[in-house]
Image (cartoon, one colour):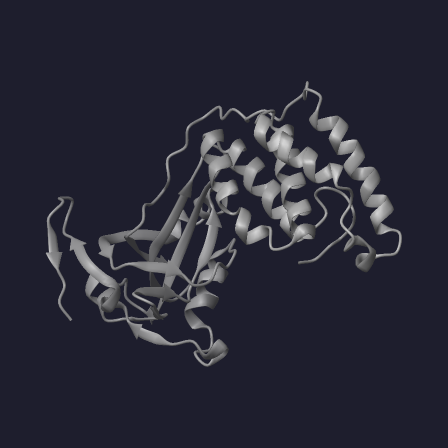
Amino acid sequence: MAIDGVKIIDSDDGYDIYNTIVERYKNGENVEEIIEDVLNDEKNFCTDSFYAEIYWTAVAYSLWTIGHLPEEIKTKALKIIEKGADEFWLEVDSKAKNQRQKVLDKLAVQLQSENLKPLKVPKTKVKREPYFKVGDVLSVKFDNEYGVIFVSDVDVSPRKIEYHLACTRLLQKEKPTMQDFFNSEIACKMCNTKYALDTDCWFNHKDLGLLLDKLFKIGEVVLEDYVLGILAPAVSLEDIYEEITEDKEKGNRRFKDTYCLIKDMKLGCGVTKVRIFS
């Protein structure tokens, strides 16, 4: 874990805890569920007394910031602070322990006072609907060719909509059909009992909206169980093209026939599902 300084949120663990609590709170999630999830991770963070200090002070500070600090967590953090800065701070820097103690003393005062200006949940003025949903199969129009992709994940919250697009290796002159999609290859491998997709273009709602005239829905599929093996931020049509045409030898990626990922498909506008057998 990287330690950038002696502040409460000044380490990898501290940032992870703060961002988890604050971002989920901003997204409108239930505070009790956020707290439960964070506390369930205690054993993963608190591997010794030093990391326990990092964990409990970061948790208490983050919850104080949003104005939802439970009494039991405040008490736990104050007990940690009462013990004094951990000896391991001397390994970070000869002056770090004394500097950290000043930060802890300030936090103790803070935790015992009410936060008069807690972080507020932003209000969204307009409710946006996603352009696509998981399982949508899309053709992509490039300058002189077409590709075919599918929507592997859609993350919707009050503040954002994000899309993950899995790119097959298909490029052709004619607009692709569902049969072309089934006959294509895709970068993926087996991970335990699930497929791990090693292809990803991760768009926000605004950037993907600029490409809608290049994307055409050609069908819908129900996919076998899978996980996203990589997360690759994308902003343009070129990002999709580069993912489709990337050197197959790069990163020792493995490829499978796309139809292996398909459990069912939807025909027309109805909801009839047809099993696809390999």
